[in-house]
Length: 347
Ligand SMILES: [Zn+2]
Image: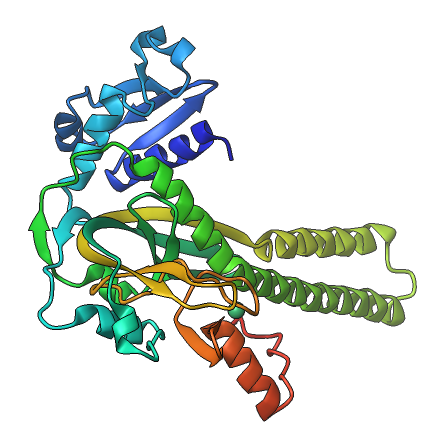
């Protein structure tokens, strides 16, 4: 996706969360907002906006671009709402660095080695997404994706942690820079969901095959029975049956066509104490980061699959594996992998 497309989907998600309706006409988007939201944004309840700088001003279109007044107002309005807010985590007492590392799976063989080379406060942005998988039924799920302040690190977080009560603080002053981190979070979400989406598509396809077989079986049988009972059955009647069969088939194609959609439904910025420590790996010592809130260890990559998402396990001297690789190895040695059931969609 281009930067403009990223910004566009970010802004439209945000507008949807504010209860807006919109209509796209080429480079211009007409937006209608509930009155109280329009007031908060300091715009009329119907207005025109554009993401293309050369279109700004056409039909009084407001330009929405990084640093634009319009985008700033949108972010301000959004952060006033419940799902958008900033909070902070205080520095815990005691040796929180050792505890956070251990919770992330990095128990240092020598506790002195976990002495931080750097300690500072940093923002972590947590994006909440509502994911809808739609075919003949609707599956909804919520996902929290964390992104580091510089946008360089991103990982899935638990919803409990993402929504846990914390001390509120003002929204970080360097905004609006959220859209760049939103892009990073969207990519992490996509990677996290890729196998689910694949399984969902497979489920839909096998249900469709089953339905097509059922429709053909039923209508072929009906036509045959009619002919057997009355050999002079009119061609019109057979054609009518076939037309009905085709209608059922196209209905089935529509019904089992899998659609997936992710919508942003909240952002939380959390100020956390952060520690950087030197961790021995097979490729020499590297700098990893952790904090007492997520207790996630970042900056490490899995020796098996290259994933940068913990928690970690030390499987041999200075060799770190991610939980997924460790689970896969444990599963393989325990028993042959089972094939997942193909009919996991409840009817
Ligand atoms: Zn791995």
